[in-house]
Amino acid sequence: MIRNVIFDLGGVVLGRDFKRLGEVLGNTFAFISADEAFPEYWSEFDRGTYTREEVTAMLAEDYNLTLEDANDQVQKLLELLQPIPETDKLIRELKQAGIRCYVLSNMSKEFYAELLKFPVFELFDGAVISYQERVNKPDDKIYEIILERYGLVPSETVFADDKVANTEAASRFGIHTVTYDCNGSGPDDVRKIIAQESK
Image (tube, rainbow, N blue to C red; front, top):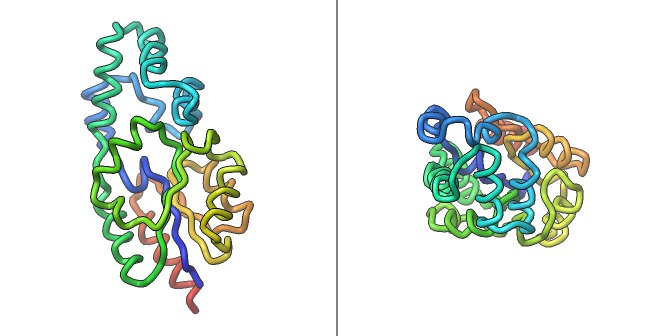
């Protein structure tokens, strides 16, 4: 029986219109929409070892931008994040059914603080964020942290993420996984696992 569902944030709980992302920011953040490794400095930003100012400077150098323009790009990237309605609906369904919901995300301190304003965050029973732990997915350590901190049994838990590497890492712990992709079936895939495990 499924008692817990863990959600990634970007691409699962919160999303961006990638057409608009390209129109507003060009190719500056193309890596976000691709299933590939982020630049090292952005991963370190999520890990909490680089500040926004340091990352902005590196972004400016990478894309030949002024510091002011690079900072503006980072701010616009943040502002383009909006709740994904289908996942929001799913989380509310799960809570009504008595299933606990958690967050496991690679996220910087600055971005996470901004995202907490969305009402969906009031529904979560706990969160493990990379910058707080100084470790990113798909490192095994971050999965160990969330399982141990909240006493989650892997076989009773589903993890939803939009990166294959992250769901593959979770599956090695015996956690059920769903990889969100462009076909939009993620929420229904979570529901199917819950239904199957309830038989």
